[in-house]
Amino acid sequence: MKEEIPAEERFKRQIKSIIELSSDYIEILNENTNDKFDTEILEIVSVFFDSMDSRKLVIDFITQTKIKKNYWDEIRDENENFFLEHTSAIFGGLGSLGENYAKTFRNLFTARNKDGDFVIDKKERSFLWRTFKSLIKISINFIRKEREEDTCEFMEEIDVQQEALNFGMQ
Image (tube, rainbow, N blue to C red):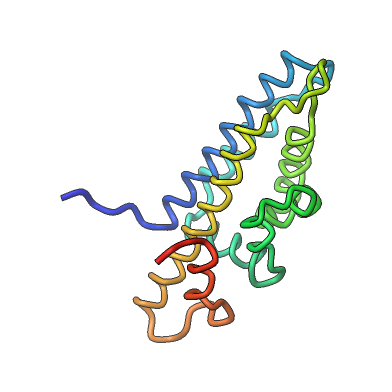
């Protein structure tokens, strides 16, 4: 029987995949534009994420994107302008390193090639939206699991049932 990977570990893997994908985008950007981006920040962020506690990582994400500010609806609705303006909050658990990564990510998301087309095309943007939505779904499952294992109401300000419905979950 296959052992289920804990939600917080799945969450961390998704974040890592976003970082790796960002590195791929930088390579494409560097090949197709006059702008040149350094991948060093991504390497630093990747090492930092490796050292972070997975549980703290998912709790910080929930706190930054749902409890302090309600960004989940904007992510669900794929609101690019809102997303770009608030990318720092999504990576807020990383402090100044997160701000640097958020700036790099914003630049990647808005970068255009020599022909004026977005470097991250519609198909790739769709994939990124699905990835960010999966972070929220993993967060919802994390909260559910915490509530099952704990007698107190973990993150009680979040209506998990409603959020699950909002994201097409059971």
